[in-house]
Image 1: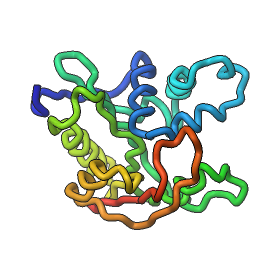
Image 2 (image 1 turned 90 degrees about the vertical axis):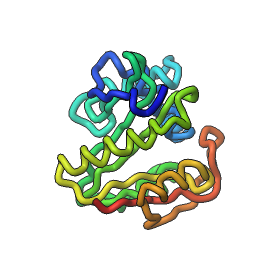
Image 3 (image 1 turned 60 degrees about the horizontal axis):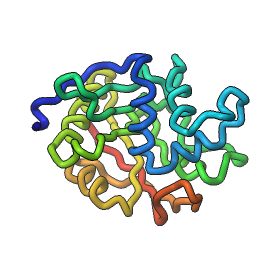
Length: 196
């Protein structure tokens, strides 16, 4: 298996369960927190990953399967990229926003292609597939006419942080992570931006 064996395709509605699993991996607990706060009765008795899958079934919103691309090797899903376009009016959340999520909203970069999730299943890590997913995001940004690509990385996730730095992302802002038992990191989250 090598990164050259990977193919990409747009996600479909049939992928939402896998998307939710991979987004759980990439968000390192933030998605679990968001999904745990869903108090709509239709979500009440569902496990967290099923809540996420249901959320990704929506269309015409940022967190939709329509903004995901799947990475496959020989027809087996190995990873996922979730990215969407940021508008002009981001980075200034309302005062009454959930304090756990507020730092991430403050780290949004206007007029960028925002990579909100990039994840691989464990057995496919370390083979260059993550870099291929980033290359795919760069091509998409150019196709969309976006001059910036942004993402948020926990600073204590040293491997991911170094990868993004090698790829030309620079830290623009940092915010302290608000503690919650579902979130796997402490310290700071960083807005990282790459200019195209």
